[in-house]
Image (cartoon, rainbow, N blue to C red; front, side, top):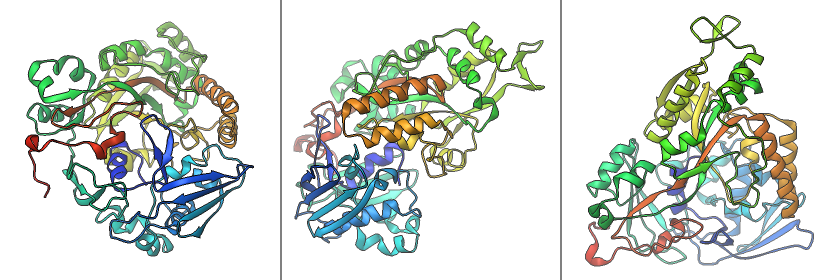
Length: 490
């Protein structure tokens, strides 16, 4: 199951959930046309649309939704998103177009859970029964979904090709063919933009503010800017004894000037992060412990933790210098620059940081999943609900789970559990604000900044309507007038 944004973007065109979000981020029906909750909030009944078909022509039924639930809770299924479904006591196909879901207790994310992409029973059941979902052609060779686009081709390291689904239940999308090119370097992506070799990409802050403000580019592309739903962070492997000491983590937080990072790395196009929630959202609070840039305080905390400078100013403890490897992914110049600024900042403390940039798939498979890292510069996308059980709960530290820094705090576990049990937003707000307070005290990772989203799209493409959900919420309605079309649909 996917955990990176690029794969989610492609998958979102191949699959549907029972519900989705509108341009204002409200939950609306997708495959489901309506739903009702019982008075005690324990039972959810969803009525499904009758005109939804899988890409191979088979009708979608409630039995596929039941299969999706059964697959998600199967411990043999490699997924980081099992937890939401574990709140379900039973899921039953009352008839082909009625799904009845019973919950063990009131669950705040009951409806949102069914945003999960649905899986085809008729394709995957033999693999699921054998515990071999990883081997299913569905994963790479021939995925079968219900979405607006059909899978056509995937050349690893080169491109993914999708074509419009003529039988899509919400109407055929206007763009006939989508090619996702896999370009490992942001600099190369920008060269392709200038050569009009790509029609859509994300800009870096430097590109947005300084390198695209000239007449030819403004004529060829439209630029967009809105608050992003992802934060960049410096994460620690908390199994490492050096980083297990909270004084060390707090010291390193004091040694990093976030304002400098925001100014020099993203050109001021973002805001400081003090925790995992975006400023302006209902769960967010600014009333948490912060770590202003203060090298004297950082040195004092490290001294308390037993790290003392030698004759050359290098911090040493038990005869070993404070030296660690900082990993990030290849092709992301922004994260590389963050790593370099962190490296320079910590050098002033007497901490030696060695930067290692690794190809994305290898970083995930060989290092993150296997916990073979000291520290990392990565980012987390935040969901529309503040529940972050999968990231912070101590039960989510297995290889296929998302708590790969190995964080464990009993109070955080309780807050996460209580926050997802309550259906009252005022109560949930209380739990999540306390969660932010504890995370700010613990600094299991250093929350650096939320950057603005900076997409750019060819001016040939029409129908884009920016909204709180961004620009992709109505992607199936984007179109290119005939006189501006460049490509054939083949």
